[in-house]
Image 1 (tube, protein in one colour):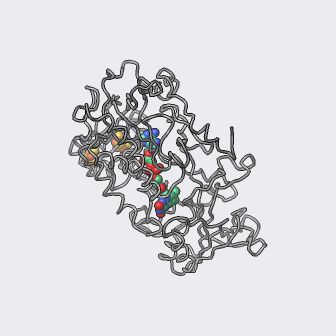
Image 2 (cartoon, rainbow, N blue to C red):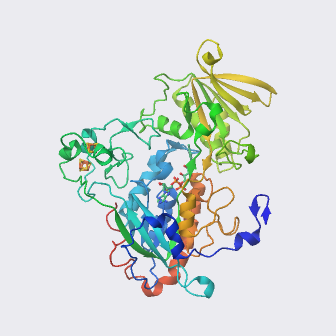
Image 3 (cartoon, rainbow, N blue to C red):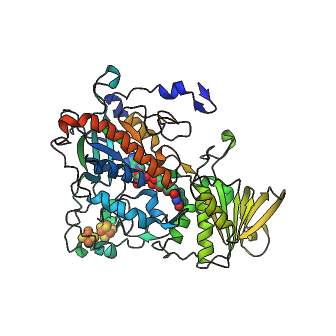
Length: 518
Ligand SMILES: Cc1cc2nc3c(=O)[nH]c(=O)nc-3n(C[C@H](O)[C@H](O)[C@H](O)COP(=O)(O)OP(=O)(O)OC[C@H]3O[C@@H](n4cnc5c(N)ncnc54)[C@H](O)[C@@H]3O)c2cc1C
Ligand code: SF4
Ligand code: SF4
């Protein structure tokens, strides 16, 4: 029964059973070669699997590992860090994001109880057997992880970067970490503080891997004194047995092109909040210089709630969401502050529906920003257009909005428009849900077992949620959620640890947790 878009308590607590192992063949598990059989399913192993290496996964892995239990941390990208690694400063304290995150990234890379498996994906999970409903043991999972080939031998790579400097594709491949603002080589590290600091060949961009040839000689290989580049590398399947799983796969951002009225992708002066983070970051592509088309903007307009809080969903643009993304109010205040800090003479306007400054120190931060000559105008902009396109002179961008305080339309000229686009579920949520037998709430994020009383549990015993995969969160809430998930996972592991704590935690063909980070 639906209650205001949410299911009743009864339904929320009536968890379905884990899908039968065979049913997984329909999903991503179908990629597993049939020759790769999972190892014998022995006693419960008190190890945990954490899927996703953003701040949520990092925190959960560290808490479990610090308590003495082995952890496999599986991250899809070549480095851990997630979205937080992309941020410049963090609200409300304005700490440098990299300064507070990098030590934790280094800790997971070095922790003796953590086996870091980057550039890897979970492709099969076999449910606990026998299921808990029969009173049997809970939390035994067999997991298969696919390690994608980096085409670089991580035991030899020193992270010197000579290969990237020599690569024929140098400066021609869009750098996703920098949100496409900068370009990189086909062989790369996502960012200089990456953990592990090992290079990876991007198979879609590398001339040899995508077209079968790269000139007369491999410039990257010739440049690598360590002899680390290995185009013969194949993907590898690794079998694990774990007692608990923490899902920390994070979030995505709404494709701002789905809101064509704001001109994203059409006007270079329109960018997303995450692009602004990279632009303003001292370690970003412009070394923190805020410039558009080579010039410092004089008028900067921020538009909040782009795609969020679209109440009549059926009439909303595709991809728009009815919920509040929870972080845009505060990161927009932060962005306005950063502009004021770097461009003291800029005129700054923030268009808002309302301001939700709910966290500790948030209202005070918002107040401070308001007093930094930032004009907060209540109203939803309806369009961004270029003056010249309407026959007028000038060619500057104009934000057209209804100021709901004044009750009249206003036009604000802008050299830079920053869109706070909605936090949305990742596109592969359905695949991950199918793999693990998880349910999703009406907003598309993973469903917790109870919205108030069991915020990190799922309907599958032994599987827990951490961070933004359960719904939008700021960093403090993400970390708190991750710590709660770790505590819950530890509860499962402790119950099963007495007989097996000191024993191996994986099938004989696999590596030990705490091995070299890859
Ligand atoms: C523009 C912007 C600015 C922000 N500024 C602030 C701020 O100043 N202060 C603040 O408190 N919060 C801020 N936030 C919020 C902050 O980014 C989040 O709270 C935080 O990143 C959530 O971390 P997470 O680990 O849950 O998710 P993510 O950071 O998304 O990490 C998820 C990780 O899981 C990996 N992954 C995904 N799927 C899989 C899979 N199937 N297998 C393996 N790995 C997978 C991803 O590659 C990623 O590394 C901001 C957000 C945005 C969009
Ligand atoms: S692959 Fe070779 S050249 Fe490239 S960073 Fe590693 S050691 Fe240096
Ligand atoms: S083979 Fe060519 S394109 Fe590929 S990484 Fe090496 S130099 Fe770059």
